Amino acid sequence: MIESGYAVEAIVAMAAVTVFLRALPFLGAPWLKRYPLIGRLGRFLPSAIMTLLLLDTLRGAMAHNAAGAWQELVAIVVAIVLQGRTRQPLFSILIATALYVVFRNVPFFS
Image 1 (cartoon, helix red, strand yellow):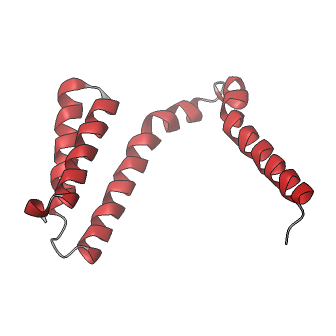
Image 2 (spheres, rainbow, N blue to C red):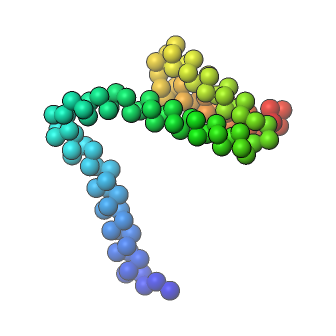
Image 3 (cartoon, helix red, strand yellow):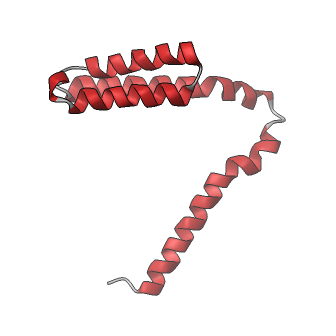
């Protein structure tokens, strides 16, 4: 069995590394702002990453869900429409996620 002192030291070390990695973007922001490439990446990458995540989700849904990917597609369309109308990302994500959860958990939609 692991000694309690060793376990505490390991947890403290992991917590320190986690805090450092979370703080790193804020610590490096002033240095990174000097480079125009970073600004261009900051405008382009979030959309590209979200697109890749959506495509991966759809691929997984088509392979593992007997009902197909219609539930995911409807939730994605709702999120895109809400985002286009409201320009509130948190609201769009929340509503689309809630709709998807209803689709997956209410027997009527399965």
